[in-house]
Image (cartoon, rainbow, N blue to C red; front, side, top):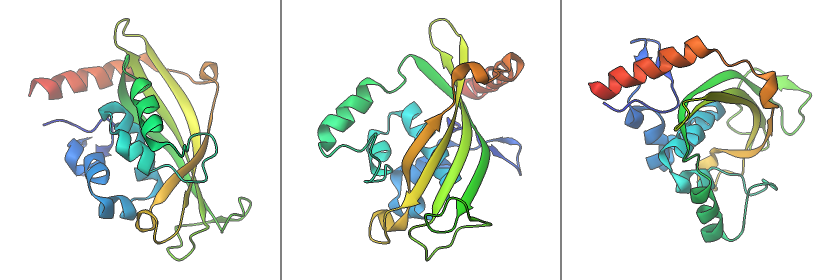
Length: 192
């Protein structure tokens, strides 16, 4: 059983979910993507980089994302394939917070998703953990991603990546013991 690269732990079993029961279903099924929360989309995008699911990366990017969205989709996909973390194993996507805001007003926090508000903003802060393939050096970065839906008729109203702010790497502590535990768990799962 191949566990999902996002590292999500099922609270009922205390183990990682299989890829197709976690991010894989969001990658492969438009209706599952449309139902996903911003946190789930962050995990799915992380897993998409690990699994080279370029179509999902492109398809989950908001058309108003000024840094990443490119009108030449074929060129954009090629660029992603060339820069898809090939020299890294993506070991875990740790969600730190998920916050919702009323409309585009990022000062008025609300407790949950408003399914009728297509202008609502969500912010998800996470730590992405990676291991360099050759040196086995552990690294991580923290990002706060902004998500917004582009309308009910675009990806069935799914949350789409609008932009992100990456924290400088030196400000993030990498817990070597935690990485070792993750690697050992992945080795056991790969052997079974």
